[in-house]
Length: 208
Image (cartoon, rainbow, N blue to C red):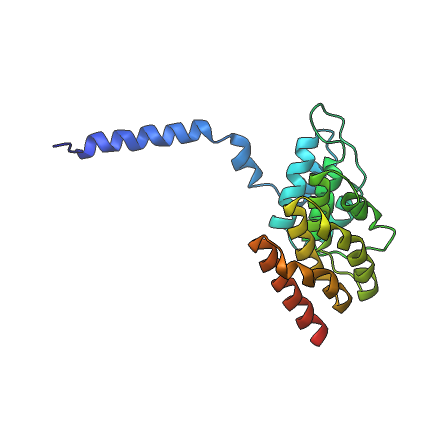
């Protein structure tokens, strides 16, 4: 019979705790203690990893920050000069962060976001769509954005199609419905589900 006596089990608990302390980086626990001001200061770092870390944490830890938003907006169009890292990675993640903050931008300011969804790169398009659907724009701007998104409903990449549908569900109006409705007959069940939900969301919004 394989029995575990308390002293032996206790030793294993201690060993496990030591192993976890070694494996979990000190930076992880240190990051949890960073203030809003410290994270905003990180946005000015020359190390892209530090900037990306701040962009990831700020909307989650300080969702009501008014100081972070203009600093993040300054990073739209920023370029990364590091081997193996997309040159527009900081710009894309800044857009995502602004979407998470539900900011309102002018049409000219939105051109960086729209540039992502006009790209031929899947990651650019996906980040652009997710960023756009978090924004809070007036109806006329939402309609312009929706017109830019509609061609993506015919993209060959299924994930782009699904995110385009979801973004139209958030920003679209009744004029978006004719573009979405054919997808109710799509061969992919997830696409059909997204189309049903987007149509329901638009109908609910336009019924108000």
